[in-house]
Image (cartoon, rainbow, N blue to C red; front, side):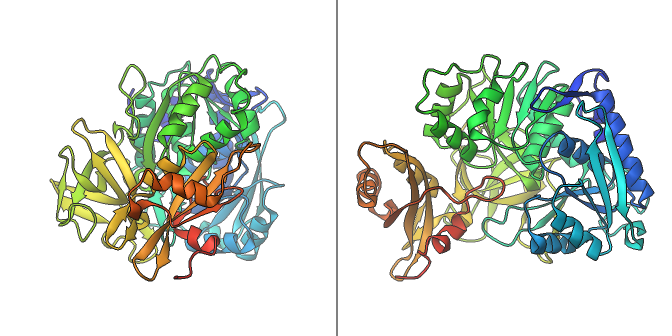
Length: 535
């Protein structure tokens, strides 16, 4: 399997009559039909005066049309997919931050986005599936302005021509999740994206016989690369669900042809909770594996999902700055190591070791030695060249060592002697209790051992004596015979953790607050739960 130079070339390299994009009802588009839809959208973009360097916001709800639109816009311009659930102010901020030239959306999706775009003088292009049979895509230019015709030239460090070469322009513009700081704007080329997609397809040994069930949002790197582009490059097909439904997930995995899926741990946690009282339901027969990425997978959840679905879980590590996949555990018969995110599978990985061995200052050197603990650093073809915004975002983001320019991920990790990576936590989320460093993952793993605990998140809250203290938000299983108190859960943890690692406060919540892509917002939990006041 070789990497195509462009997304269009990757589509053209496939069997034109092979199925590519399906909806949950089974309606299917072949590669040939998808290419025709890509051409239709590309022609409409060009008619609106948009070139390869224009920045185009895309607001299309999850499903086949979102996948087709993403492929088309990434092939033709700089695609900036946005969450359709944004409000007016969020769309206005996003358009301004992106320097957007146009909006691609549907008639029914996000009227607030269209209103903001028209007020800003952006071109607005409507797309829709051509009939219920998914026979193609129709487009309609709702409004155009002079702004859409301005070429960006070399303002993105690319050629001033309108060439769509993967090495000369940005194909995708995304913001970081902003879990610990203001979101940063990232530009990724087709070469970046296809390199990572090829890594996913190679790691998972994808073929024309494989079909992915995608439940990840297609305004996030995980869904765009880990599901969509990996399926394009792997030769298989993809079922584009309208979103994640924990009740329907197991049934959807049992649909004919579905051989794998990829999701985040919070989704698998919801699936496990919904199915824990239905042990008689058989596992999907066609599944080769399920994949997890974008957040840490607790070992207890890993085991639970494998038992529920009757197939291996492939735990991987990815980030937007790396065009998604960085490391992965292999598919069987390769060795999957629980509590790790696997080995290099898309980028070279190393550890930046600071003077105290962890994170007590600027890293002094980069090492790939087994047993090293420190900040995870990466380099590779999928890694971005640098942040586009805000100004100064690139400062202290890179280390020159071992003959390369390594990107600092902000994750604390440990490499074992065989190159498997264990993540300890985000450096900014490591809890500093009077100088003692506490990984929230370790605390959560213990809390999840309590039979009444369904989910748990550990986080830092201010403490006047020790700087920070450990707190935890916990959800309980439903229909418990005996419901424990927060103090009982805390005592359970205290019997298994060192004193400084034991939560000072355990707060019961109905659900764990998550971001739009299913990530835990640890840095914000103290404020959300009224624990941010020192004392």
